Amino acid sequence: MLMQYARLTIVVIMTFIGGSGHALADTARAIDSGVERALSRFYTHVGGARELVRKARGVLVFPAVVKAGIGVGGEYGEGALMIDGQWGGYFSTVSASIGFQLGVEQRTVIIAFMTDEALTNFRRTRGWKVGVDGSVAIITVGIGASVDTNKLTNPVVGFILDPKGLMYNLTLEGSKITQISR
View (cartoon, rainbow, N blue to C red):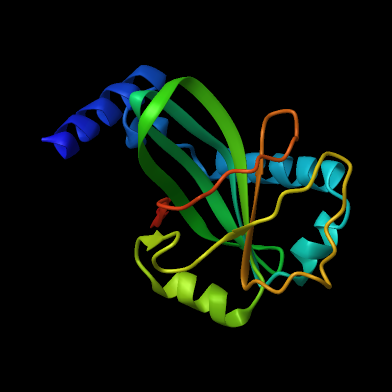
């Protein structure tokens, strides 16, 4: 019963913020443009970000992940994977949560695959679940701070930014990332 309530609430929330996942779907061109803007903000607000992206085997960027909730919440966003500066496919992220929550917020999510093995595992798995198919170490740095790529040892690292470029200390646990066609 609780799961049915959660699904119904997510459908209502997604309708409230703009429709179903297909109604929220961006074109490839819109996603590409959003990814470029998100990376530009990332480079501006976090020292060492450009070097981190250059060292990464692949970088998955969700420029706008919208989260909404009224007791039960859901979030959805679309983005693109970049490998060696080339587009490597389009993806959606979706998750649900239960607990006190009210409102709508938007954030940017950047996930860097630092090893070939981590990138291969991600690309091979249909419906990659954070925390199940792979862990993402969220890196928290304040605005204007730097990331030391020489000290990063995790195969997958993530960053969450709000619209002003500030870094969140949140988790991506439970998010499901699935390849989409655009």
